[in-house]
Length: 335
Length: 78
Image 1 (cartoon, helix red, strand yellow):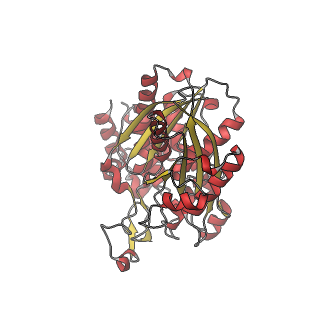
Image 2 (cartoon, rainbow over the protein chains, first blue to last red):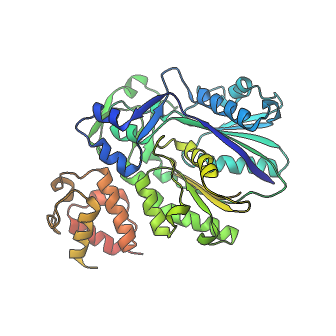
Image 3 (cartoon, chains in turn green, orange):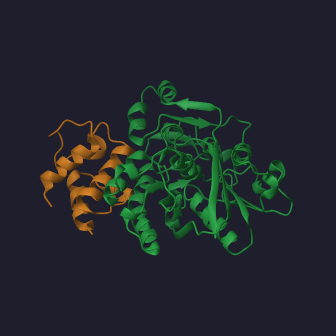
């Protein structure tokens, strides 16, 4: 059986405030939109910094915070969509940089905003089946490198970050009721079309194209998001997934002490919260000061929630991630 | 479903428009000055909350007038 022993995270140095975005895009009501999405600032990497660099910072912080040795890790899972290279696997490079034993298993998995849930599920399964005892799960993303400078919408929403989480063998089953969901028909709604094997023409990736929804130009090889649809699909899948988690555990909404969902956009989360009848004090937000950090939003929010909320042993927290893919998943965490 | 009430809900969802300035024949994409992807999202959220109907963003984009959205909502109610 498995439990989360601790979470640490790292934000890069360069801060992008709403004021700075307003200076860059004076024609656009950044302030109004930022208020609606619930973000005041976000942090981004510099040109030389990759997801692995953020991962190293977050993991080393975790080792210090928990006072543990990297030697004790027997499996590392890295969730990223911005790896350093196509190959080798970034998790293998992290094994070396973090000083993990060469007997440790290491793998990357490519998921976005649902990634932390899937990582927890993998870690939970490795531990439950006796394949590992101390799993280091890292989520690390640098979406800022995918975003065109002119793309004010995505620059408002996304921030870069990494979070490191230690999942260990435990006497109690503290991770449970995993529920998954996938709908690849939504793949085109949040996509980077170039850089993989499908579209290999690097010159073409640099050509401008028009985003019909926003009316803005962006380079073809940068992040494309159909905002209205990408923020609308959670309305369809989040409530049903949350209820599936509850059904699996035989619990009701009132039995849950805290809901920590992917911090996509405050507007849509508020809508979901109200529709599901979740009281405000049980629904945790942490996005104002770091933005949507993709797979790191849930561990970052959870890190703060565990400190701020007066949670007792045995309390149940529902975690739920959803996004690019489309991919979604939820589970319960017992304090 | 009441069309006038729907127009009024539509107006509140968009925000930033003068109350009573929209009507069923308003071509919302072009005639509402502040129409953007967030307004789009707000309308979808309003339809989900008030009418328990699930509409996709691309379906909303295909509508021309508010009345078209009303009809789409009517046919999509759970």
